[in-house]
Length: 494
Ligand SMILES: Cc1cc2nc3c(=O)[nH]c(=O)nc-3n(C[C@H](O)[C@H](O)[C@H](O)COP(=O)(O)OP(=O)(O)OC[C@H]3O[C@@H](n4cnc5c(N)ncnc54)[C@H](O)[C@@H]3O)c2cc1C
Image 1 (cartoon, rainbow, N blue to C red):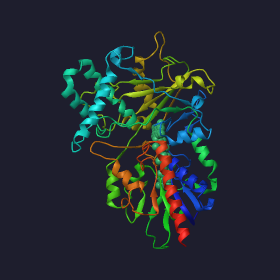
Image 2: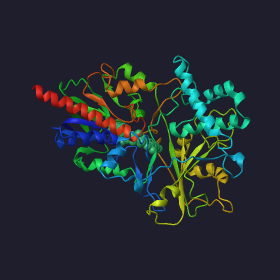
Image 3: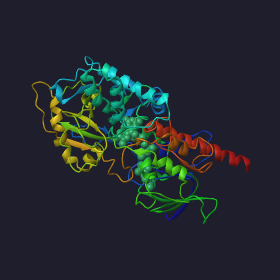
Image 4: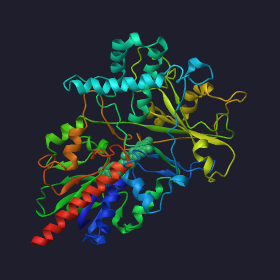
């Protein structure tokens, strides 16, 4: 590909990029032909942060290494469309693993924490309400970390709490780390409350079904993998009417450009080997909005065993951290922490998969969700994962059973992947999110690049389903609709 022309160029073949192309090529209003739409993907595979690993398991399982749940089930477009088209049957292909999570802590000596007796969930709910009201009452209140606001709550209402409630609330609230993907000393209290629209449905079918469905209607010739975009020239001096996209394989001239690379790539300086150089530079309004956000690092460690020594029916376990003392939770780890100072969420594949018969071998597996900075450490040192976690497994080994050595350990590699560099967008203390969405989504006139043929899509460029697969999907659909509208109106005036 020395140099080529196309009408729409899409950077990134994740869900957002694929959905953009899919809509452009299949919408009944579309006048685009296959050759008018081209996707450029830097990696050698399609799917971005959606990846169903069907080969690493020694038990015959498939694992979603990236997104695995349908979140916001009341409003999740991907779920609804998949159900409507018969591709996804909830009773067969999904599992609502939203049952109360079983909580373990080293203190409780092989027994679950008596969350109900201690009324911990009620107190946690009250803390969440407190956070909401705290910022609602006075918008000018300064932001602080989730840990700090927990202290504010305990200080203010401590006389109504038992000593156990005070102690375990500070640990329980760190559950949010396994949503936000980084440690609670950095999580912005102001943005900490996730306003979920409905339950969470675990996708047993594997998200590759979504990629397959989108790819069915995008000709393979229109996706160039191993093609890294280096420079985007918006005021193209060589050909005034076209945008110019410079890749390591050649130059693409196009009328419309949809940039769906992860937020982590957009945040890199243009001088960075994996950054994108913009000519002219992106306006400060956009770069400042990007700087106000962060890119989290949710990770997964999957352990496979020859025998199931834990409760095969437990759906999820939240293992609480040990007391951290003065340790700075978000500091880069050069060695595994001496104690379990980060909580983890264990998702038990045995409970989730008990109704399907894909399993071909004896044994069983579970996945642990981890947060930054632990994720980075484990993704760089996967051989250290077992030693780090195994002591904590004593909390939930079944009576009379012994913890066996794993036969397989699979860790995610999102933070070490130079084209992804983490998991999804988030907000640290004193950061903000709305401005980035406003700048990138093109939904507010006059913001971002203005009424421009350079568009943005991706999980970070939407207020609906941000961070999620359905957010990426709807943002791709939105940008395709904008382009179709613009293109069709141009044709009309000619
Ligand atoms: C561990 C983990 C767990 C998750 N769990 C869930 C979940 O349960 N449910 C859920 O809904 N979501 C989940 N997510 C989030 C979800 O996977 C993402 O929000 C979504 O897949 C993002 O899609 P996207 O198209 O915006 O970006 P991506 O999928 O990242 O696509 C962007 C593409 O751009 C490419 N690219 C980067 N730089 C360049 C360049 N210079 N030139 C060309 N191409 C480039 C990348 O290689 C990538 O393929 C999870 C993510 C992770 C990592």
